[in-house]
Amino acid sequence: MPEVLKAPLVVDFPFTRSLGPVQSAFLTGLRERVVLGVRTGDGRVLVPPVEYDPATAEELRDLVEVAPTGTVTTWAWNPAPRRGQPLATPFAWVLVRLDGADTALLHALDAPGPDAVRTGMRVRVRWSGRRTGAITDIACFEEADGGPGTDDDGRTGTDGEADGRTGERAGPGRGAGEFTDPVTGIVAPARLDYTYTPGRAQTAYLRALAERRTVGERCPSCRKVYVPPRGACPTCGTATTEQVECGPRGTVTTFCIVNIKAKNLDIEVPYVYAHIALDGADLALHARIGGIPYDQVRMGLRVEPVWTGEGRYPDHYRPSGEPDADYEAYKELL
Image (cartoon, rainbow, N blue to C red; front, side, top):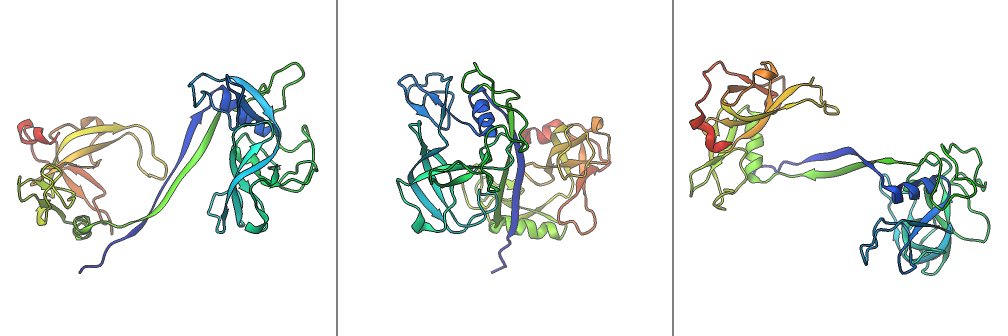
């Protein structure tokens, strides 16, 4: 039995989104140490606020300020915090119904241990010392003792102190949710860490690539050869085991011109990414095209792989110098 391949894989990208009037007011309020909810047509106050009533789908715009204190409605202990979570030490995830609200807000509760947490306990917001207009402006919750709320550096303070805020609360005569310099957008980092283990077919494919060969598998029913192999025919659903070496040359079937530079990818734009039908394969794979001006790449262009250094797969494909393939030869692979 060959050794099973596995490798760590990280998907990491920033997600930028704009905010509507309700979420903008909510996050700007957090920056100013104000917690806002929204009132529904039947008088309920929802925290966090939403733009539409989840029960009636009615549009909601009536913002209401609620207290920074509340009651724990349910909780779960987190003994081993992960990267990016609110606290680095063990804490409780809690649902807190803030005073004046009818729904609960999910956040972290700083507590010495699970024995110190209970449903019904009174808690208050611990504000971050520096706030930017994000849910992390609430550093966490802490048990309420009747005193003023604290920042995460231990300061009590009041609204208006110089703590790095970029705006200020609206003056007299303005309604809840009206602030100067409102937050209009956020950047939320998205990251997924996992270990990828290919199956039998892809393991054989990757091992062949390490030898600078391209191997596919033939369906015993329809006789099509698939590269990369999937272990089963996507058309017939039949398991595939017969290996077939394909290429190394192939034909460009379709392509696109990339004009936006990818993060951490040292390739100058514009460049071409194409689907390439390797000789002997019935499924096109995708790869970058090089060695030719981007505006000269075309359907039917014959290409060959270019390997660099100790690379385990082709760095790119370049023109092979052969005449272009006839459209009839690859039209089924578009």
